[in-house]
Length: 332
Image (tube, rainbow, N blue to C red; front, side, top):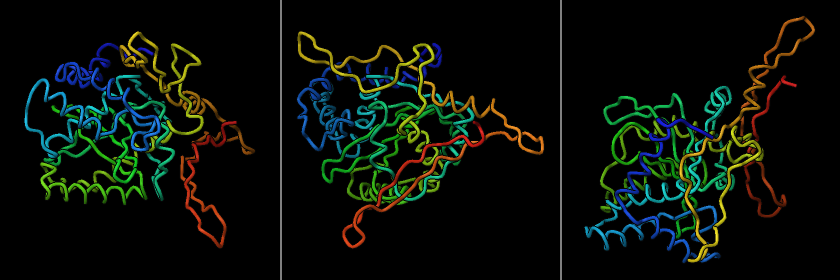
């Protein structure tokens, strides 16, 4: 779909910045992916480029083009941005939610265990979701408007943990603010895990800034809203459409055969995916009459988690979480 020239330029600005800053690095990443073992548990199919591999590519690029001393404290941010934009440039999907669905989703609480398996089912290696009205605190306690967020999955080889990585699109200069959410336990546990790791990294010299004083509170306020949007994209029937190309759906592209072997080709521009057209239309247009003659406007039952135990009562049991998608109540 067409997003509009001005908005497209804004969304792709960071991608173009990296392309200019690291000339030739996409070819290096292509080569690195071609060398990937298909059965490598540290590099599963739903991860385009693990952070560890992105860091290695970055070190190699600097060795060839701009020799500088890279340390763990200075490489993590650029490597994360590189991994995210390398993944996003393939499909360049921009997901715009129906207004009424959006308001319901960002009001959906994230309670209990994070649905780790579900979050690994994003429709593309990296997605960009628009986030109208969302803000995040700045270091001076002012509020920064968030235009959207890129989201992708990383895999930590040390313990084979999946990490949901979110890069916020704001008007601030430099790299987009980045948040890592380990897909283990609850959201609160993940936030504390991130904060503890952050402090430890500063003490070891692997990070160059301590967590902001209000980090945990800001994360608890913002992350559930973005998580709800992402979870909707991961549901069984997420109601995603391209109005200019009806029937098409986002997905992970297959490599194309070339004289130099199989290659993935990046999209030439962002593609707009509309999310929730059907549900939003039902919310706005459907009314039903009840016995007294009054009209009842249908509403959306909030998306929520359903947690349950599986396994024998006397043996080892596993707690699982199922995503219960939104449902229109009273809409026919």
